[in-house]
Amino acid sequence: MRVLIGELSRRTGVHAHLLRYYESQGLLSPGRGPSGYREYADEAVVTVTQIRKLLEAGLSTQEIGVLLPCVTGTTPDLAPCPELLATMRARRDELDERIGTLTRSRGLLHDYIDATERRAAEQHQASATG
Image 1 (cartoon, rainbow, N blue to C red):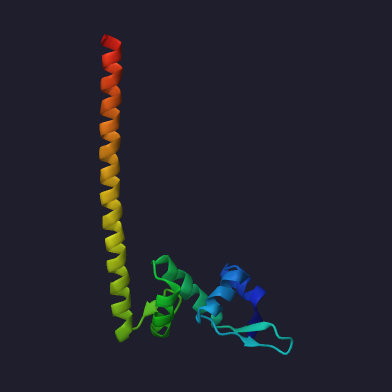
Image 2: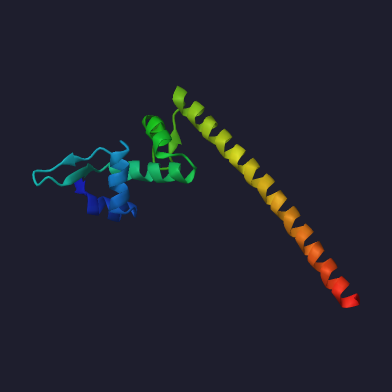
């Protein structure tokens, strides 16, 4: 059975414009009906669910395009394809680096706030006693 984009959107909770974006990224491949409308196979519901969960894991649509052939089920389950682990490890390493950068930035910001609050307190104390 084939469904139109509106029905796929309703079944997955994903807006039609995102479904068209996934198609433009090569993640979905609808056919075209006699009317020219996009027609999706029933398994597109599972594919969209997989895409959404992989996006939640921080993967890009480009990375998902590499991984999708290795993905089954709605969990999704990942088969041990060679490119799968390398792609996921590279993404994890990028996230770890970003987390490290953000942690350092947060620490520096805390230091600036503390120093500024100390100066403000010193100035307040000096003006109160002076």
